[in-house]
Length: 219
Image (cartoon, rainbow, N blue to C red; front, side):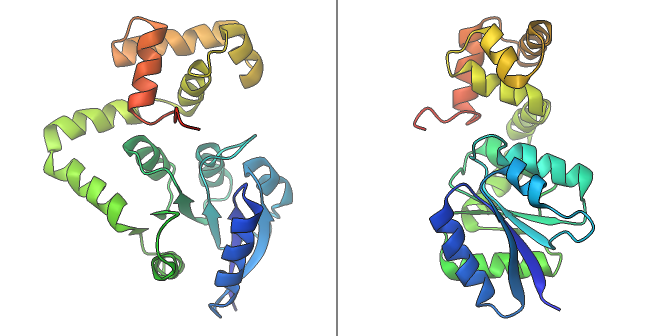
């Protein structure tokens, strides 16, 4: 039997190209395509889930962070391979925390993609050279990087989403509406982040989010 694959990426042309590559490998077959996490969930048959999900991070409606977290909780049998343009520490750490089996950058060579998906198929972990260097850097700078990693890992998914919206110059009421929570909940996110990060102002939170790659100011 072929290994079944789902592609979750908001760029249709890229999905089409990836589907062609994957289907040409012989042992793999693309059985589902979606433009964001919510569309993936809507199309997914939990009784017959794909073996592997190729997942982008930056997507509308439901991004890769939320999607990976949902998969880990709801369908943990699915192996997730991240294929993203994001190479910053925060993106890598958050996706690894959500249980992904591999992480490669979109400008990787075709043979790297093939190695990655074949490794995931064998239940092996795979990262490309850039990501591997970052992980090695954490180990070689154990004390400082350990503190930074612990800090980033201590930020919950809702708090990270709050930080993203905070950088979009939205009011707290607008953020609450977009996150479908009360303004009181938003105040709690803010106050918790003030304590965790030892930051006292909204501007400080925005600067932290940009420095750590939680939001990309060039998007």
